[in-house]
Amino acid sequence: MAYVSIPAYWKTIPQRYSLIGLKCKNCGYINFPAREICAKCGKKSEFEPIKLSGKGKIYSYTIIAAGSTPPEFLLQEKYVGSYPVAVVKLLEGPKIVAQLTDCKVEELKIGLEVETVFRKIYEDEQVIRYGIKFRPVKKRRRHKKNEK
Amino acid sequence: MVQLLFTYLGEGDFMEGKCGIVGYGVYIPRFRIKSEEYVKAWGVFAAPGVKEKAVAGFDEDPITMAIEASINAINYAGIDATDINCVYFASSYPPYAEKLMSSTISTAIGAPSNIATSDFTSSTKAGTAAMLAALDFVASGRGDFALVVAADSPYADFKDFIEHRLGSGAAAFIIGKEDLIAFIEGIHSVSMEFFSERFRKGGEKFLRNLAIRSYAKYALNKIYTTCVSELLRRIGRKPDDYKYVVFQQFDGKTPLEVALRLGFKPEQVTPTLLCTKIGDTGSASCLISLASILDTANPNERILVASYGSGAGSDALSIVVTENIEKKREFLTVEDYLEDKEYVDYLTYLKFKRGI
Image (cartoon, rainbow over all chains, first blue to last red):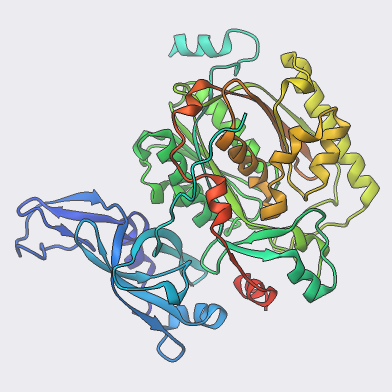
């Protein structure tokens, strides 16, 4: 990926900000990202927007290091070093590619449960491009009882 | 509609018991820096009482923090994002000087397009100001639910002492009229003109503080005394009626001094001193502390919240916890966010802040 124009980015805001996919009214398959023709039944059917849960598991992942960093992520690579990118299989089925954040490389493994978080992806033309990343599922540590 | 207006504007304090908090949520970044790191780097750490502070990651800013806090608040309230009629965002150091950010937040959380949005900024009391506006919004009958979210990650010159105390975090509240976990008993605001304490000129990157100690202290006491005593007088309360009092979290010491001067006891203030663990979170600081108190509060307890906008004024709210609070305690608490942490050294801190 390289330069994405503002209108092109804008068009994908529902999927980038809120993880909105399209459910095929013909076969029920959930398409993410949105597309014109259903990836499963191949028909140009009607779609229904559906908000995905954002929960899933790491299907595969890799570490992007200096030298293979796309230009929009050069600043990030300079400041925080190599970063992980994963293919995540969502509960609802679709597989999506996104960065992993708030995690240590050592804790990553295929099958790890992750959830979406809203983060800054990169900045271009002074416009902050926000979107979704994944992090290991944040759990409730303990249930605090009232002390009286 | 006429009936509604009559109900809310009819008697006494128009806000009394009619509006309040339906749900809330917080976000605190997982990175922390300890005060020792500052001592190693500078030989001194200039934030009394602060042991460590929360640091926003490289890919975080007040907008991203606000969104996570808002989602937590919506889940807690048990409403749907499409039920929200208003989104008010507060930050003293927002990522854009011009470009509405409450619209980014409302889009990301899935709120409808037909809503009111506004950004509150340029003061550490922007968070409570937004909350008062949200209460007005709901009390006046414009809508059923308002989301108010304050998030801050203030920024100052790294060699400046004021930088030492700056932390990061966000808190969001859903304001409504029914199923309240806490209602607002009364509110009061004051406005005065003291300057030089904490400011940032247009186009400037760094927060500044001319640190004229006795003058700043005079302003602080004058504003707080006026605001809190007038609120208590109006609603007929006294300091002893409150289980907790939340003051602006500049550092671990000042809120305590303010409280003692106003006739409160240390045990009413100590549980609210979150600044010692996350630093000064600017416009979000009072609201994060309020959220942490609500995490463990019991029904019928009273909480006083009074923010401070550096020399310019204060907003005070008297809040009463209801029985409903027992029902809704299955969501991420301030404590959950505090415990999930990863320490960074000073160099990493500088890199996260793009400071070198």
